[in-house]
Length: 207
Image (tube, rainbow, N blue to C red; front, top):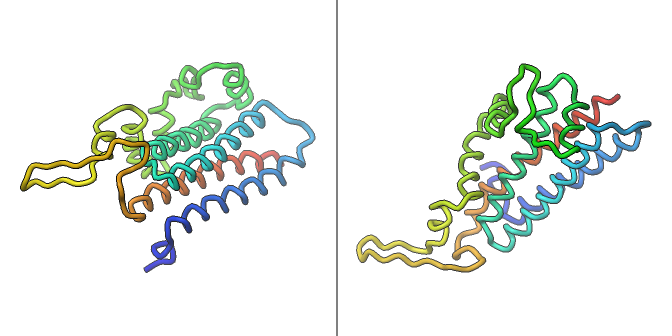
């Protein structure tokens, strides 16, 4: 059994918070050395802020036992990583970031080969080196949009012999084991690390 397998849910959430703290420290140490700030830097700083805000929201929602909203924020964290990665798909990052900061939608902009950077396209490019992203994207998209997943997540028990279903309609999840939150938390950590690595690669490339 690995050390990660022995971690509790609180351990996992603490690991996520510790990662955020280290990411902030490293990003700040690089950013403070800049003599000038460019459009790309502003875009990345917005991404960094969003990464931290979503991480805090995710931790709070897991502790509040609100799986559907936690999963939706997981999808948003993946969206952040996809859009940071888009900077690697264009020849002029300043032009791309200026357009986004001016209010243009990224899915209306094009990469260096002339392809529109739709969500599906950005997901495909990010998944080239991270194939596990495709499954996460599909599963969490079901919870961003109203779907059958929201009904099934309210079920507390199912007795096929009596054809009886019990479910809870409330802001909190039905009673479930702590282990049920392990996979979503571990996945959020990995996506946050991916977004953080892309952010630090940008800051480091300035030197």
